[in-house]
Length: 102
Image 1 (cartoon, one colour):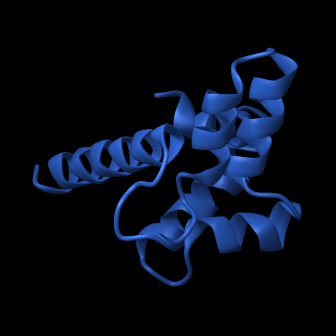
Image 2 (tube, rainbow, N blue to C red):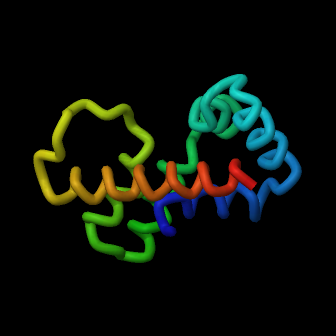
């Protein structure tokens, strides 16, 4: 659940603006990270990583929060952190499918 904590920061500080960004991303105009970067000059993964660092969470969590949206570059996870990132990606996708199938 913590992998998208940066979204909560955007929603907390910029609720209407971020709601518009989420709608645009949902309409597949551009990827969410790109839209965030264009508007805020930072994306939710970077915000989440900074927040996790401030909270002094383990490096593994920082890696998951900051890298779970990056393109897949290997076919198989090569490390434990890569494996955890894949698990988070799959869980995130399953959640999206469940929401969209309502």
